Length: 538
Ligand code: BGC
Image 1 (cartoon, rainbow, N blue to C red):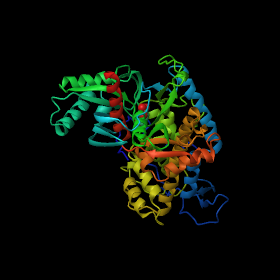
Image 2 (cartoon, rainbow, N blue to C red; image 1 turned 180 degrees about the vertical axis):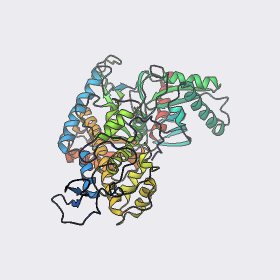
Image 3 (tube, protein in one colour; image 1 turned 90 degrees about the vertical axis):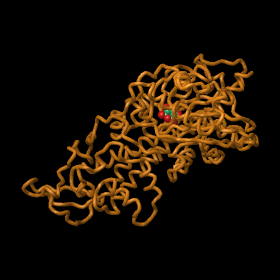
C-alpha cells in the first residue's frame, strides 16, 4: 500500500459534525469523564435491550440521572451501519452510473467525462519492439523500458521514485516536470549505454482527468489525489514533459499520452490475448478509474467520428467524479469532512468513498468521533495522549485496514501492536481492536461495493455479457492498484455485489474474470507509444 503523507491542507482539524453518538465537536483533549470524577466507576449491571450497561452519574453533577455505558462493539456496529450499502442501493446507484456514462458520451463537462483516448484498437499480443514509459502515479513515478517479444511476452527494466510531497502542490509546475525529466535521464543513462545516439519513443501515463486532442496531446481538466500544481490545468501535459526533456537535451519523443486505466486495459489485452475478451481496465489504488472500449457511433459530443458503425475507441471514463450532484450517493459525516478539507471539494466524491488514499483517513475520522464522544464508553475511557496520531490528519495508512482484515488470530495480537503504536497508548484491549476492525471492514466493504457498481455499469453499457458465442461467453477485466491487489477479500466483496445487479446476476458474474494486470500502467504506456509510433510511420 502506498504511504500517505499529509499532502492535503487540513482545515477541519480534529472536529466533526455532532450526532447522537459522537456528541458535539470536542476540543483536542477530551476531559475524560472518569478522570474528572463526573462518572462513578462503571458498575456492571444488567444489560439493557441494546446490551449497554447502565452507570450512575455523580449526583452532584447530574441530578439522579442515569446514562448508558456504551460498549466498543455496539459503538462500532453503529458506525459500521453508516457505511452500509444494501443490494437495492447497489442496483439504484448502478442505474445512475449507466445514465451518467451516457450523458458523458453526449455532452462535454459532465460528471463522468468519458474522455476519448484516440486509441482505436487493443493489442493482439504480437507487438514487438522496445519503448520507454513514464508512469506518474498518485504516490510514485515509475520509468520503464519495456521490450515486447510477441506472443504476449515482454521484459522490462524499471526504476521507481517517490514524488516529493512539495512537488505535488508546487506553485511552479516546471519543478514537477523538470524533476520527472531528471528521473528519466538518470534511468536512461544507467540502462541504455547508447542512449545519446538513439531516438527513444516514450508513452506518458498521466493519471488525472485529461481532455485528449490526439494520442500524443491532452490538456489537464483537473487534478485529483491531493495534487494541486499551479499552472497546469488547461495546458498540454505532453508538451510540458517534452519541453522538460528538450531542456535536458534528451533524445526522447513523447509519442503517446495515456491514463493508467487505458494502460491497464492495453497491458491486459497484450499479455492475455487468447483468454477471455478484455473489455475494461480499472485501477483501485490511490485513486480509482476505468477505461473501456466504446462504439464511436455512441460518442456524439463531437470530438471523434468514424463512418464505420463498428468503429471503436478506448474511453477513459474518469468515473471518480461520478455523481458530482450527489443524486445517488449518500455521504456520512466523515465523507463530508474529508471532502471539505480536500484540495478539490465537491469533486471526485465517488473516488473519495472508494480509493486507497481516503480509506485510512475515513477510519481515523470515525475513530476520532468515538474517542471524542460524550457519555461513558469503552473508547473515551482510554487515556490517549495529546501527541497521539489519532489527532494527526492522514496519519492512518490504508495498509492498517488491510492488516486488520488479514488478522484472523483469536486475540488480534499483531494488529493490536500496530493499533497501540498508532494511538500511542501503553496497552489496548482486544475488544477495542476488534471494534476498530469492524469499522475498517465496513469502510472497505462500501468501497468494494461501489467499485462493483462501476464495473457492473460498464458491463451493462458494453452489453458484453449478452454474447453467447464461445470466446465471447466470458469477459476479462484487467485491474491494477494496491487496494484491489492487496486488500484481503476486496475482490470477493466486488463479486458479491456484482451478483446482485440484475443485468449481471450470478450467471454473468461467473463469466467475468478479474485479472491483476501487474505493472499495467507502465507496460500499457509503452504499448501506447508502440501503437502511436506505428501510426506515425504509416
Ligand atoms: C484520476 C484518474 C486515474 C485514477 C487512478 C484518479 O484520481 O482522476 O485519471 O485514472 O485516479 O489512478
